[in-house]
Length: 486
Image (tube, rainbow, N blue to C red; front, side, top):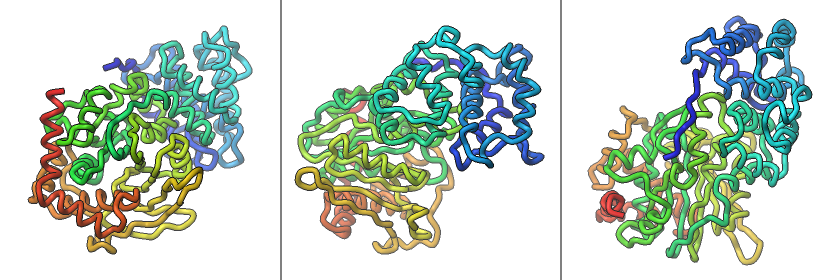
């Protein structure tokens, strides 16, 4: 496993300021407008105190925090009134400007004043600095520029502050499709996709930061689908800040499975008639990207990788290739589906599930509108002959299929042990009803929307049968056993 850089801090007060300013052109909030808001003078004082060694290590403002903060302040100069700088921010930088110019390291000084630093001063590649300056000016980059920029970030020669500036900057500028594609291919390009001998293959893309409120059924859905003949790929990490929710990797580890399988070992699991699904950790297929996970705790907001890592393709089969990805923020569904089309998937599906996952809630709640996509909103495409696609979009209402819940159930305990026990009990036919229902609904609806089952009732019957006859549980048990043998 690749080591993670050691970061001091992060400083909690500066993080609170970053939460306000490190966001988009319509959401950024100036500092100090209200009494409880972080005050810009206090933020700058903390940065200077940290540079002078006046704070304990655990309270220091890290290089990554400074990078994110000063990049955000520069980008906000391009925003409209209301999200641009206020009078307090102007006054704070006027008061501390000379000290900052004198004491900030050159690469952070560049972010505060992009016209003041040269490539020599910040010890970085000339193209990198030119592209960074365009980001700080609120501009977008091409696919090739973004990909090369990301490859530099994934390496070891760029300061953490500059890495933070790039990822928070492109997120604040609301990365376009070419930039999203650049992030995806920098992590694992299409030419490195491995072949699998299977009639169909489905990639599931869940948020890497896990689940904190609802039971996570994805692993158990994979076992049900495998029992029904649909091979499934899961991928993710053990834990990811800042949310640090429950992940499939944690649940698998609790069940006794290995979670460090190589992609080649995963191929053997996918092709094994007794198993038919596999989990691959990012620290195996993209160790450089995994190494940046702690950076997320220091930039306060989601980096562009939070979108593209879910849509990562690890394998392809000679039959039908499908991808299912969860999303939360409206607008990214179109970019995700475009990525799937560009990678030649036969079917692509995005679901606004629980906590941004693919997981359908057991209660619909309010239906979707053009401006607001509800939980259980589903959108996708099926590839037809030639370059044509069949497009679809709908809300999935569990009540239509006999899942009658006044409220969406939440587990009493959120832990890897409780989720592992609940999921295994469900596959053994003796689990809590809401857990069984959640697994059945998700396995069935996904196979219906992917076109694997012709209608919802057939899909539901098939999922229930895989649980009732023990085949889904047998698949999961076989995975755990085989994972320690390969």
